[in-house]
Image (cartoon, rainbow, N blue to C red; front, side):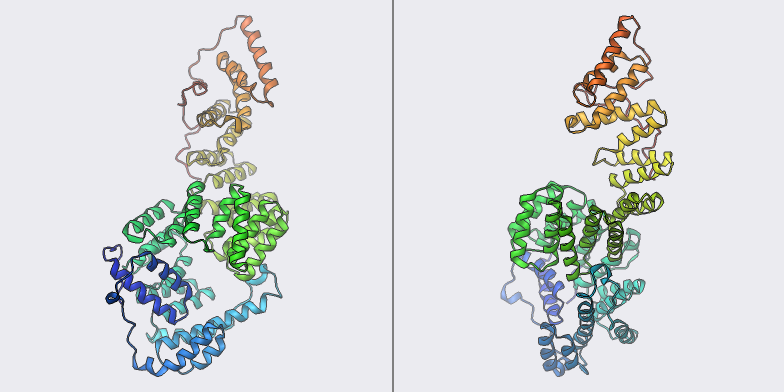
Length: 579
């Protein structure tokens, strides 16, 4: 059945028929994850009347000849007796039987690899063991491919084998061919997604023009941290008729998680759990949000709930790991992340989170190893690159740290945390100009931790650039006071102390007095504020006039009701500079 063209969602009945058809085909071949994805989409659409239900595909003569062997082998396949399934499919000639024969051999090799390593090695060494069947499968599939005898499903399997052998360029070509041969098979699209490293590579691919491509592009935008584009694409898919899709809701929640819109992400995950209370998929991401918000009761409830549903799922182990980490029981947390990795060595989140736990336990070598495994699983994981940067920073190796922070910044160019980390590295390497660029850029893109201007001000202060330091402190105070958060930021007193002295030295006694009065609101600056007020009083008693130098930055209109900066300019005009 031909797939409906890209972005043509007018005929939802035709899309529903295509989904029903691909569900049946994937079921016959044991592709359970593709079955689940298509089934969730089909469930979100209105049911078809009986006369609209598509009939099963017609059997060829080869299918009929292989029918009994295929039914027997599929029963063994479903019981995970892969060698037995492959044995009874030898000599079968149909495309369906050939795929199941090759897929059984592949899964048999995977199962033996896992059995060999699960007890003898820890998860950090697990990735070093290979599936022994891969090379043989590649040779056989390559011959068939050269002869043009592989259908869309077999091309998908060929691509998986190539990826496992780290032949990534060839794998991309085969997965693209698989999407053209069978555009409705989500597995091929998802494998292709894992191999695309940047937007340029994505644009260079020649992909089929069908509606599944819209889902792929939305998923790809999320992976490439192009969250605005991803949300727009998912919104258009919901408006096209998939508003009830739990898959789309979960992907939107993940997108909001990636841009740290925690409130919106939590709302969507809670809504998802109401719709599907026994869902385990994506619950590890939900637990990350609960962890960040320190919501111990909610995280405890989620962990206990998932244990009741399925205690041996990867996501369950990650949720329990987060629960123990929030309670500062880092050894137990690391143990559960290790369990997750025994269940799935390619679990990206578990590798990264285990790296974090090793950092908490001051085991930097194990943390580095864990982060490196995360990068092997997915080179687009900025958290692993950032974690490596932090680890080498602790080890006082700033050149290494700089390299990894740069990688993280390339993946998240508008994340202020990466820019602040880069700035700190440049400071340690005495590259002050580059550090200034990073700090100002971090402020310009939206400083989530409100530290960039402070660090920039302190750097100017160290370099005796007093006017520039004062400007940064002024903007910092304006931002803090405009948000009503001044009492929550201890560094406000640091800024007020500096500005009080700055204005006093420049004979702007009114501004200096106001700064000194504000210092008295903070315990750590109260005595200095009182001392400065006494100095100002003494100077005024001597009749010394205040300066009228308008070139000096004026400060404290914003400390009243006006929150507009008087001179909101970059100290070095660095607002458009990207490090």
